[in-house]
Image 1 (cartoon, rainbow, N blue to C red):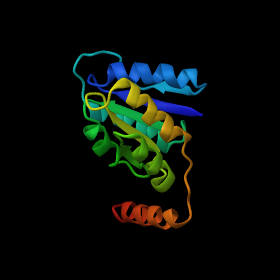
Image 2: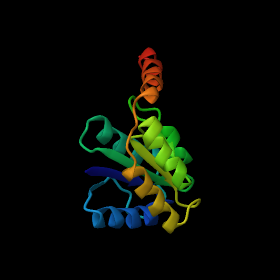
Image 3: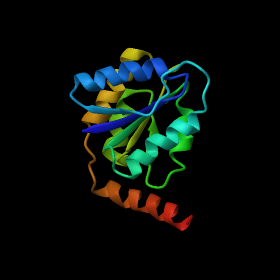
Image 4: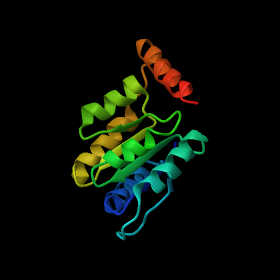
Length: 148
């Protein structure tokens, strides 16, 4: 498995922690920055990670900013991206199982490091259930395609 990870200045410390955790799990991580606490614009990092997902250079993406909201909004502007902002383990598991979320967004100022790692693990370990959920994803794709 290969995961793209990106953060703005508000998420840089949590990004480093999650990166180490993923590597400990044997997951290849592609770092799209930032690696500094200097102020940067989160849309740049969301765009880089989502493009890696769209182009299938990675399996999934993880985006982190202060609240996770900006990253989530930006990521979901990209065609084919199903980004989910999660602040609890149940939502992380459910968004993969029901929505086949391909990008996880986290708020570094909202969830603590221990909870963040549990959210990441729940999301990664969940499987998409398909079935009745697929028709809903097809409807989302139809909405996206109508925007072209």
